Amino acid sequence: MKIFDCHVHIETGLARYDLEQVNHRNIIFNSIESYEANRAKVPAHDSVSLIFDCLHNLDKVKNEITENKINALKIHSRIQKLEQKDYPIITEHLRNTPDNIPVIIDAFYYGDDLEHLPSLEYIIKWAKEFPDKKFIVAHCGGYEILKYLFHLRSLPNIYYDLSFSLQYLSDSSLFLDLIKLIKFTDKSKIMYGSDYHWASPKMQYDVLRDIFGRLSLPEKEREMILYYNAVNIFSK
Image 1 (cartoon, rainbow, N blue to C red):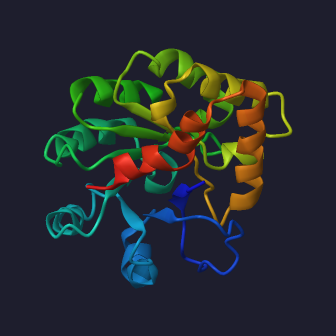
Image 2: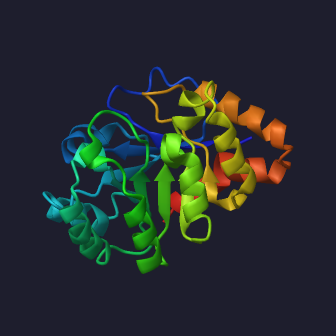
């Protein structure tokens, strides 16, 4: 079965990437500096996502889009230290990005920096304001998975990236919420991801296969989640 890992970081290289049968990866850069230092390391068959640093490096981001060097944009509230006053500015710049460039939004709640947590409010706002753009909820909302499922399920342009949550939540009570999201979400909107190097691709693949078994998902839906959904989203 083919596999597309939709959430990978390459700064430490791929030597420890432990899922041998993966076919493609989406390499995500959470800073312009990392992108410039490591873009050349990306294998030719993999896709590239770049931080949407429209507040400080808009010209660089626009250039990479224009030159067809990236497949998606990334918004990460904690890393970018986003404040409420920044979101209307980001909204205006999103308006000027091509609709065929999907937007990954970090939604893993973590750390003591409560001022810069993800904004479910703006995910909903963007999904409604830009109905032709695809928005990917990275990590499915972390410990807020059920909240994200209930508030986003009616929006047709919302997709879910299972990365990191497959591993981090696998031995917690929240694991049932993750299973519920997979069970009740349109299977064309869910993608396997690992968040390598922060987590193990193989372990999360095994966890996901266990969920497939629990839910008795048909082969076609397993293939969609593991491979074809990501191909459809990240191939321009």
